[in-house]
Amino acid sequence: MGERQSVTATLRQQLIRGGAGSMGVKLASVALAFVTAVVLARTLGAEGYGIYAFVLSLIMLLAIPAQVGLPQLVVRETAKAQANVNWGLMRGLWRWSNLFVTFFSVVVLTIGGMAFWLGSEWLGDQRWQTLVVGFALVPLIALGNVRGAALRGLRRVVLGQLPESILRPGLLLAMLMAVVWWWNAEVLTPAGVMGLHGIAALAAFLVGVVLLLRARPIALRANPKPQYETAYWRRAAVPLAMLAGLHLINSHTDIIMLGTIRTDEEVGVYRIVLQVATLVVFGLDAMNQVLQPHFARLYAQNDLARLQRLVTRSARIILLLALPPVLVMVVFGGPLLELLFGAEYRLGVFALGILAIGQLIHAAMGSVGMLLNMTGHERDTVRGVAIAAVCNVVMNLVLIPPFGLNGAAISTAMTLLIWNLILRYYVFKRLGIESVAIGPNRGLYSGASKNRTL
Image 1 (cartoon, helix red, strand yellow):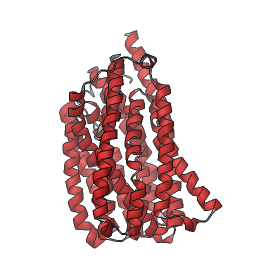
Image 2 (cartoon, rainbow, N blue to C red):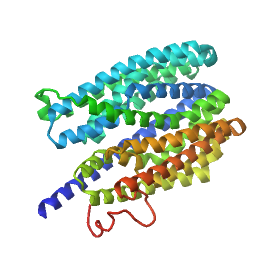
Image 3 (cartoon, rainbow, N blue to C red):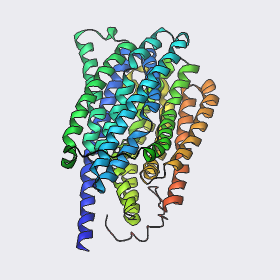
Image 4 (spheres, rainbow, N blue to C red):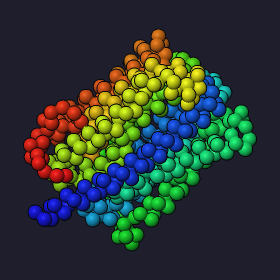
């Protein structure tokens, strides 16, 4: 009994410490992204910022196949290897994942470069120039995400997020401010900003490599013989790759289709309101980084009662963190956009309200996707997100032509509702766990967890 209480206390301490650190990182990341968006919106204008946002969405889509679904696989398998004290398997996993990502990055850049070169007339000169400069981001983002996943799998949650969440946007903002301060804001172009982004990504990647080398378990530093389970990893990576791709498609389809059908100015305004609306789920994003290895461990130990308590409490914290920004955006959206970004961005006030409500629903459903992925049910996540992705494309095609950025916002909010409802169903079906933050707790293990501490 005493040993179990000790393990429970240790888990609670890890969650509190990791949650506080991850929340701090997320807050700093959100603040950096917000200030960067303000600087770019005011220096590039709605049209120039729209070009940058459109091309960045294309780059993010190119990074999907380059990562082949490995980041979440690396988190899960690193946590399992550490729990089983299998250092050779951990070393083999890291080596295999880096080689795999490098190979696919080269393939993606080759095929993508040829495709976009053939369509350069459709893109236009400014978009094409910005895209060529941004190609360097693909391998840096892909390898950086795998490296961060290894750190998170070791439960070094804060270290795993620092390079990509703090250092990369922080360096980009510092370089932007230096250009504006020492030269003139007029020298900034979408291609120039993308070049600065590439420099920041390279610096963040190199720092991340050093952090992982220093954070390795002592036993791993003895260079144990690498072990490989390549057949299993490939099978597991396929649904995770599809899932990562579908998530990014859902995240960027609206911007790409808006940029294809409407004007760069609308893309710029929509990108701003989309970025502001994501403030609603900063708590969900921060908590997910902490929860990943704990979901995997508790499920591997078949401790579903503690898993239910962890899911419920984390969902309630996420919802409480989401409510204040939603109220601000719905009530003061118009003045807020004009004050921070300029009068031309007030066009997005209605879209901001729609997106904020959609993100609130997303937060209220809890960590449904992460819970399925960390318990080996990633194929269910793929089904749900795939259905939502198809709905997203169809709704964008129908709503963007007549309603512009407001149509894109409605489509995004409806997509969030669809995929969360489907994933919540699968969580209960596969695990017997209720993920929603509010309402009666009807999880199969809620009774077993009554009057017990996490």
